[in-house]
Length: 364
Ligand SMILES: [Zn+2]
Image (cartoon, rainbow, N blue to C red):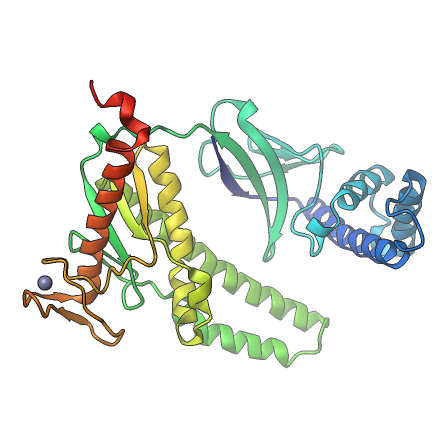
C-alpha cells in the first residue's frame, strides 16, 4: 500500500474565504498561547491542561481579539482542541485541523454547514474507504484541499519489462536519457528571477503591514505560485513521457541536501527540482507495474567509460569523456546515462529475476 496525495484548488465564496483565513489565524494564536503556557508553567504544574482550562483558554482568545468574534463557539472549541492535541505540528500552521472534513461531488464539507466548491481536475479512486485523510491548506493566496488516499501498489512482473533506460540529471540540461534524448532545463526561476527581485525590492520599500505592502506581498506570492505550477506541470509531463516509453528506469539517487550547500549550484538545482522529478517518476512507475531503480549515489557514473568500463578521474569542467584505455570519445552526461542504464539493469535483474522476490516464479 502506498499513500497518494490528490490536491485541488478550492473556490470559496467571500464569506468562506474570510472564515478560513480567520480560522487559520485562530489556530496560530491557540498554538502559540498553548506553547507559551505549557513551557512557562510545565515545571510547576501538570504538563497536561485540564479540559476546563483548555476551554477557558479558547474562550479567552476568542473574546480578546475582535477578529475572532465571527467564529462560533463550536468551531472555536473543535478546532482549538485539535491544535492543542498536536501543538508542535501546527506552528507555523500548515493546515486547519477540521476533524469532519470530507469531499463529495466537487464539494468539501468542513462541518458547521459549510460546503466549499473545488474543481476536481483528476478522478479519485472508486472506493471511498481508501481516503485516509482530507486537509485544508493555504498556499500563497489560494486555499487547497489535500486528499490522502491509500492505493495498492501494482506488482512488478519482470517478464513484461523489457525497455531499459538510464537518466542522468544535469545542470546544463534537465536530463539526458541513455537513448540520446536531451530534455532541456526549463529554468523558470532564472527567467523570473529578475522580476522576483524587482517585486521583492518594491515590497522592501513599503511600510510593513500597510495596505500597499499587503497588496505587494500578494503580487509576490502569485509570482512564486506561478513558478511552482509551471515547474510541477513540467515534471509531470516529462515523467509521463518517460514512463510511457520505458519499463525500467534507472536514476542516480541524489543527495540534494548535500549539493544545496554548494551555493553556486543551489539555484539551478532547486530550479530543476530533481527530487520532485524522481519521486514523481517513482509513483507513476509503481502505478503501472514498472520499476524505478535507484543507483547508489556513490556509483561513479561520470568516471566510467560506457564502452570498455575502465575508470578515470573526470573533473566537473570536462564536458567530453575521452577514454584513456579504448580511446572512445563521448559527451560526459550521455556517457553517465549509459552507465546508469547498465547499473540499473544489473540491479533490476539481481533484485527481480535472480533475487528472492522471484525465486518461486523462476520455473514457470
Ligand atoms: Zn573505454
